[in-house]
Image 1 (cartoon, rainbow, N blue to C red):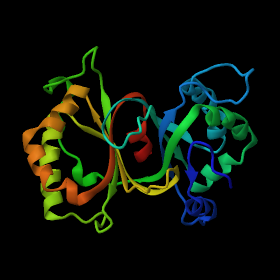
Image 2 (cartoon, rainbow, N blue to C red):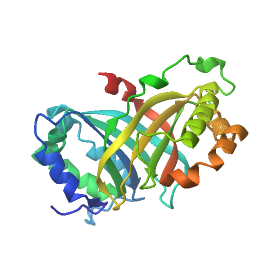
Image 3 (cartoon, one colour):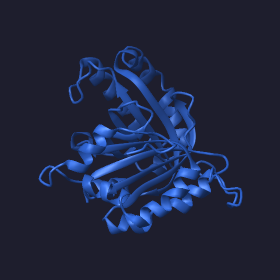
Image 4 (spheres, helix red, strand yellow):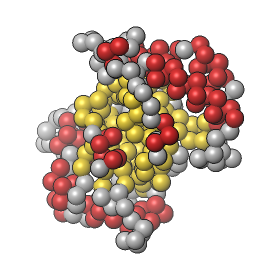
Length: 272
């Protein structure tokens, strides 16, 4: 199995996806971070000169996805990056597959492979993470209307998703909450709720099927009525004070991206 030009395949995770038993299989959400070439790299002088983004649009495998029962449940364009390395991601997408096996089956379809030439040409780099939803039932509560918050949506500044991709230190046990983490989560939640946060979906990362060799632990999609509302949370002094004693000892690696949503059925896909 050769890795594509735009990333490394985790072969151990690929084997797990392909060989999982039907009894243990089930829905999987593939979260994609995408960085495009300025000009698509078809390698053919006669090929039409299109941007990497346009090539990816040509790739979008709607028919192969439908054939295996999968659907695109989230798409957004990256507005800005608050934290992370020097990569500047262009787009975020999430595809829900009915089973892990169906993801593998789609890769083997002839109609998918014919379209894949466009992805190879347009994509400079990508991270694709197989994810499962985190149970958020304990976090549900009364939420203010977006029209009533301090920074509602405007024509110039509409709704965004704050995307957090997180890698914790190896001694952190996912699911166990320290006193410091509980304090920070409580304070951050209070501030975010005041500014209208809606959780579209939080996910645990099962594996990174394509990437740069890094592994990740969680991905959070938090919706806000505007970028200004999210930035008010980022800059809140009480939240920052609670964060000072936490971030260095908890988070090993992260991206925080502001994403302008173009299609969002993520929350619906989780409860469906």
